[in-house]
Length: 166
Image (cartoon, rainbow, N blue to C red):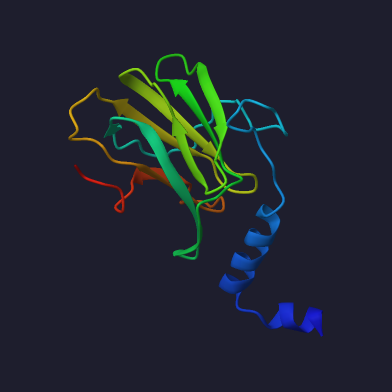
């Protein structure tokens, strides 16, 4: 019965179900700095095109998993986030999302950075950032879109449309 059900599922539903089940048991680096498993601290960039940096006052936000053009999960607690320097790609900090699936890197000095977001089994996002000090014009959050690896599609980051625009 179980095998018949899997065989008759539509491919998009099967992909969503299998990806979600795969991700439910993967721990990472905790925000308090304790290592619970191997969150990658390796710089990765699979971007085919960089559209320029996101201009923000802080490095904070959340993430979603998208399969077949649909969001299947928001607030991914298993996601890991590494902040790298733009020049030389030196790792500054590596954290795991909190229990709500959000992330926040405190006291990031204004400048240019790369936020590398990883989630085992999905494509890595590499997001160029420009941190601006005190203008309140760029007080927005980042939304990381995780996708299964594909030929023309990879994970990316954008300004979260649900974040405040003060």
